[in-house]
Length: 84
Image (cartoon, rainbow, N blue to C red; front, side, top):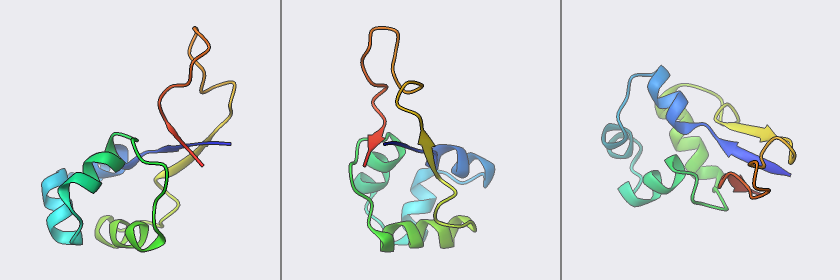
């Protein structure tokens, strides 16, 4: 099962920059950068709750299920997304 994090999309919808979000939510800049670039494998519920509270949406809104065939590039490798 492949999951994609759409945090950048939600941040753009709310017109908020990463720096402002990490300051308001109390997260580290590094952790938010890793989430935004989809370089994490695990997200804590508390982290999801903090981000959701600051951006004003449900915690599942920035996670998207991607079918395994859709997530493959033409060379057969994954797209670098987050996999749970």
